[in-house]
Length: 296
Image 1: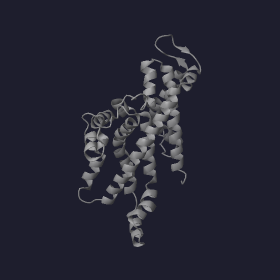
Image 2: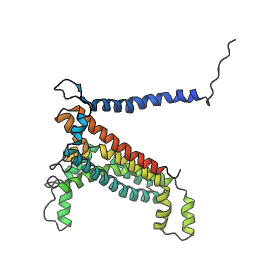
Image 3: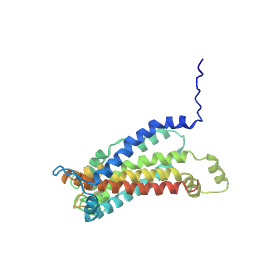
Image 4: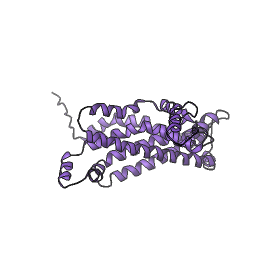
């Protein structure tokens, strides 16, 4: 009788076999599109003339365009604003929910805290566009009623106000998302540490600075990393509120890609900008992950 070969979980080939579906999935969704993007960046692909290899001409045209610098600067300010605002509010909300523990209605409070995350980004932009509208907006009405302002603030006609408006609209969605990461990290902290600190006479602020904040570091970093990545590449709120205006005040790098791809019909140059976005996000995420793992 033929002997049946048994499968050893410790065998190297068995681990590779189990990894094959995941590797295939990553290759189809990440590696293949990136390879296509790189190939496209070296082509003249504009739907007018025949497709041809142009080498680094697309790169030279994009890097000599002053609009690239402006788009990257605006995107950087936008990303920093959204991430910073989200972090401040997410830390406050997370710590409040963490201190609440399992008290009455705590589940309701947690649900309400993450509820805005269910709203699509485009819809969030439309909501805030209405709220900040100089003619019928609720926010402008309240500003006139409770502040010395006598006239509404027109965010669609002021560069600084427009940028602050789109940052606020995007952060409103990102705050619950970051709250989930930070709250999960805070809930994993051993409560005995707080009790020992209380016995030693530590105040609430001291506990937060020396226990909660350091032990929630990984959750905070993950929240910052993903929020910054989404903000750097997502234009939903900006598109539904300002379309990059007034002028070029909210001209995000994503809108720059759309202009090259749809308005100018130049897919080769759009691919170059896509590579720039990919490199920027990769460098930032690599630095954040390296910093997170430096103590391990």
